[in-house]
Length: 299
Picture (cartoon, rainbow, N blue to C red):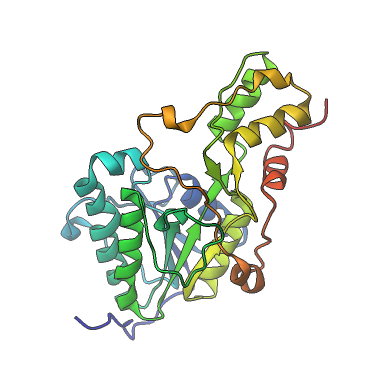
């Protein structure tokens, strides 16, 4: 089948967010509304006034008619790695089959599609993976993201892929739980051998918005400059807040029965995003300090 080309219908300047229920979709919706953008958001639970109910897991013929917008950002999907591992067929239906159906439908209306992907399209065997490198996933979730990316190729230059590493935000339960436990004098047990590449929610949203607003095609990477272990994050927090360092008691992730794959590296090569999106590639520790500023005031 040939490429799906945008129709010649007039497209308004508004933005469509597919899946405003989650962290990224909800934050992006609020960001655009604050900056005066016209936004249409879809939701499973109708969390905000004016949202359009859409469950992409349901048959295509039940979907509502969505407005013709300048760009659509796909934030909907199943991101739970363990759920993807346990139910590959069911999660693939949502993350690949139905996502691609909706993407192609919107592109046919002249809408630029922005697809959010992950560093897990790579195997984590080396750091700073370049956007041009072929995907080599080791998790079911990574396989689904890579397959969806490949399926979008039929849209020609009318789509952009934004691959993310680990997005940190101030309400992140894991880190907030650590801070609370440490302040109460209770030990915590972070993984000493599991890596992440922290990026802030604010910088992530601004980069995604820039890709959508300017209809910037291709693959975009958002990543910090280096990897850090979760134990390293916890130890930094303890040091900054002058908690008892002995309360940070690292463990191995190999003890986790649900862990599908342990990447040695999670960073992505993000210089194009730095150059063209204004994305500042952060040091991982700076993301922790900035995100949890109130909690990390020196004692």
